[in-house]
Image 1 (cartoon, helix red, strand yellow):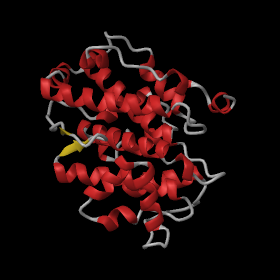
Image 2 (cartoon, one colour; image 1 turned 90 degrees about the horizontal axis):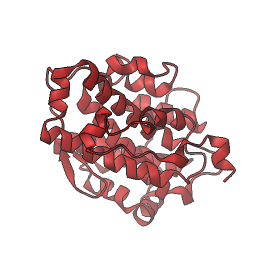
Image 3 (cartoon, one colour; image 1 turned 30 degrees about the vertical axis):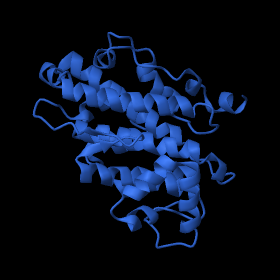
Image 4 (cartoon, one colour; image 1 turned 60 degrees about the vertical axis):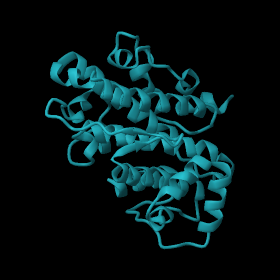
Length: 270
């Protein structure tokens, strides 16, 4: 799953045309970590908490430090989630993971609501690629990792490589859409799973991760060229009301980041 993700991100950046793996230690690592600490302290905190610092630094590429750092933050959040048995939040708090129950159906059953040609759908919602297609806990895990990822990317805009665009916003938009579709499919067709999602501890976790994602997505909207697929993914919840499954879990309608719905050309014209 990690290799598939990084290969996808590097391909989107135009940096590779084939298989990609983490590199050995490179001379830019010290400079990259100093930039992360200065510009994105929450991302640096992910590095500081990592028990395996080399795991973090192996994702940093000197030909695109911003991409390497955001990937390192993303992947290390997954590692911390396993170590803590909880989702680490950007503000330093943790929320409990959602235990898998027989009543919770596999997210892949909601994949038909999306364009199957999207790489994000292929990786995260179709069987055989990632655990997020099989278990809701891992779908939330990816939502949280992409939230950290986009948050770091926005903070690190000043060190982005000219001409090497990576659509950081697309990943979070996709995972927000997948979670939205999953909850609504649950409410409509899977009563036992819907009862599980409405349990107070599960509801709090979903609501906390969603609110964090909303804030980061909204704060990213003025970052140019950060999303190509994002507008179509955001449509999956932008029209949702309090009567949508997410509205029920949040006790409010989900917030729509309206300016993030603009297409790439419209955003570039601002």
